[in-house]
Amino acid sequence: MDAPYLLPSDSSLLVAFQISDGSY
Image (cartoon, rainbow, N blue to C red; front, side, top):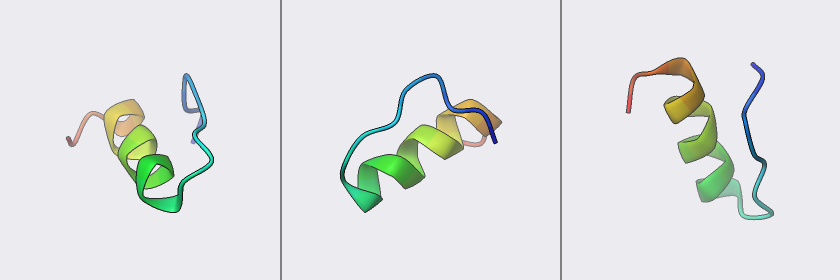
């Protein structure tokens, strides 16, 4: 659960986590 960058928006946060997880 280590995202390279964290954005203030919840949606962006989810996107960041998905990219970090590689399931985007």
